[in-house]
Length: 89
Image (tube, rainbow, N blue to C red):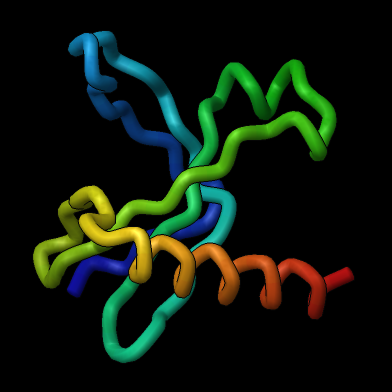
């Protein structure tokens, strides 16, 4: 599996098919699935830490990203990421 690196920047299309650059700010593995926490590059350059929108993408075996489908899965990933951030501070 291709490893996603923190700091990697890539382009995704949003709902209105506009290309947005996002940067990986963290990766985590939960129950055997890999996830990347990403934020918009524009936000990272202009906003303070509290104002940055973070969202999570699931990473499949090929290293491709997919949306997290269920609220439960999102909550699980979000909580694990918060825990990871708090441990680093």
